[in-house]
Length: 173
Image: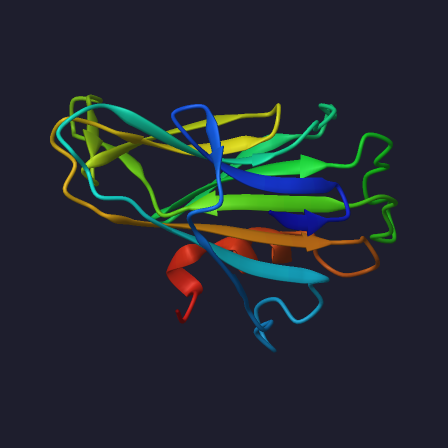
């Protein structure tokens, strides 16, 4: 279990909490995200067995905020979760509360006709109720899944730092 300012984060496999994963603390990048208050990789080694499974990285008992949302970038999908009584940044860039991003390496792209092209051998799901999940299919061969978690208590600096800090593609693990 990882303790954060917004609550505990657990990993679930098929709806059952597990402790069979590694929690690795990570340093901030001095240029991209120098002001994070916490940054971690949660590494799940899971050998696919030809059946469907779901692996969730879940913020326990999250109370949905009107600001919670999906954040996506190149090869990463993330959910941004905010403290219940979060006040967004004002004209001067000052907000109140806390933001946490939970991310996984995943991207859904589209072909020229607008049909989805899955770029990975597993799927992705999320909920503003507080989780990011990988969906293991019968054809999944990937056996290591890294969930990135980063949080920040707001100040005059960018809230985009949590998205970058949680991005597994920027982690040296």
